[in-house]
Image (cartoon, one colour):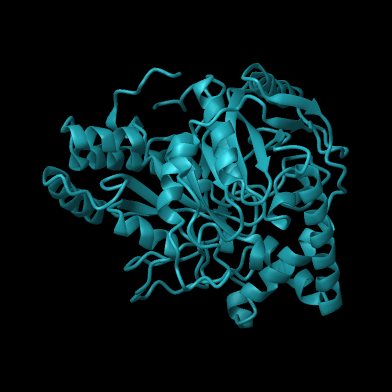
Length: 471
């Protein structure tokens, strides 16, 4: 267990609400501390598209009144939250990192996850950066520039939820909403040393429907698994606008954290059986996390799931979705796009319906294979990324043989194709002090089990890494 932080901006959502209830401090004090950190985080990493200080303080004062009356609106009342700038937020522009999106309002709707947080009394601090339309695994955009890593601003925060990851890591709110279509909460969480969960598809309602289809998820980005469980209990509320939602979850995610790890069947796959050059420091840290699970009583076997890399099928689906995003744009607006996005849109527009359906066939076969695998194993453990954060402002690491972001993040996008829950948490740092992440993957609908195993690793001290410089 880590020593509890003393600065209000470093407290977890769970600890903040306990402090509000006990009268130790108020939401106003907490939000002021977080706003101060948000300004510092923005100066260091460019992780915000906007900081709404006046709105946040107004919400904090309303929350303080409810806590004084002992009538909190919900389990996150008064907790500072940030929202990725792909997710609709009432009264606030959602610019999606693009110069082609007009900021004029009225922006009348909250996305389902934002609506549930608002109903629960959350305090919205601001919107966080994303690459244009969330298209890649790093965060830089024509509209808002480059987002740096909290541990070294010259390195990337990852993406596409890089702004959210940097904000959480730097104390600009303990909770953030991100999106994940191919790793977009897990990649930046791994690079920035925080927790993130891509839940089973449909568990968190999504609206508007993503042009990337059923690859896209909304997920919590937090400092630990306990806060993610808390957040999941709020954002999983039903919303009729998402026709593919799963409906209310069975049972409490927070209560599930206390369940045992002993006896869990854990498959450890260092590279998914593929020719992936995993950095030695990453491999060692992930193996150490697996050994911790074994020490907690999990039955660990080193075994690969026996699947082929589905990257070409993923590209067909992803690039087609990107082409759909920009289909309505004229030539003048297309000229404003990120050049890399423009390239994949052109490729996506060339795919036929038969190409798309062939990719769907690959996806279904992959899902069946993983379903079979999970009949024998409760969890699959892999590195989240084979590397740590590289130079900011580039899609791939300098000197890489790959041209697209999928080349260096092979462990994330397969589980968007299969719609399985997958979480990442820190398990160490490399020689440069950059965070390393371990990924826990469960069978579809096993979100609570993934959170339970992650929480056990937090409790065992696996995720104890140094705070970013200046925090």
